[in-house]
Image (cartoon, rainbow, N blue to C red):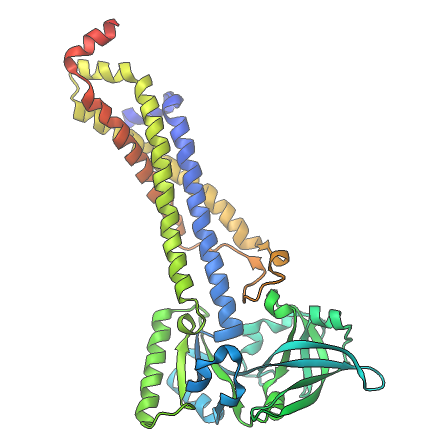
Length: 427
């Protein structure tokens, strides 16, 4: 029967061509959108982890409540012991301390007077330790546009756009004006070793990268850090694993220090600390919504196609009923035809969708011009991400839509009256 139906579909393209094209288009869009959404989601999560929260993050209880304000007066102290404990207890995670800070960058002229000045967002990281993971996480070396990677204390990196705006040359002195951990004003001179472009608009407009030891001294934070970030060694965020580590750490801290205070260290996860929880849930919902819409829309189109086909095949169906084929058999054969069309269309549509997705995954789409005013930690290059599920997701709307469309339009078979078939043929 399948062989017979397949021959009929191949020989009579008017029965299969339009439904096949509809299925191909719908499946292709479904596969591509799924890969695109995956890529956009991964990009946001990865960028947020790299530059903001890590996969897990340790802060003081008070700092965590106001983390968006970067309250360094509530920072962690005695981080060497805390880092050692974290590395020993959670070996699957790479740990690194950071100090985030804000302030002004002042560029003096030959006479020491202010030549240019701009607000900056600063990040102090472990630049010189050979065991530091920061260079790899932040991808610093490939991001350097001019100059070189800092090699000694007192050297910094500036965002390339900021350096161009302030007309700063490599090797010039830049003065940081900020506030210390104790609230007093601090000024410290640095040498500009190089300029970087991270490809994240929010950072490229005005970021300063310095070694953490320099900022510990400048901000009166000896052996201190605003936060300690943790990154899974495979660089893939797992919310289940992150929550397990955070729960274990927080419970152990409470057991050790029964008297809680605002400077007690607490650990949070990327999902809870970044504000992305609702966004992640929304993306998952949107992905399901896209599939549902395509199934519904394609079903309507294929239903109308089925009705049109039934009118054209009115005589064929009547003859089959007249020679003794039961209505259930005719109806089931129409459903079988729809499944064959859906399967073929799903394969072709999936291949087409994967082709476009692979191209976007490999080459990316630069949306830097659209992100110039953005404050979000989002990479300027959008890439798709193909997962194992991407290979199969197109079969849901492809097979379901054709089946549902034919199931609805094929009900007309049962409305044909066998007693009037010959009168229909005479007419």
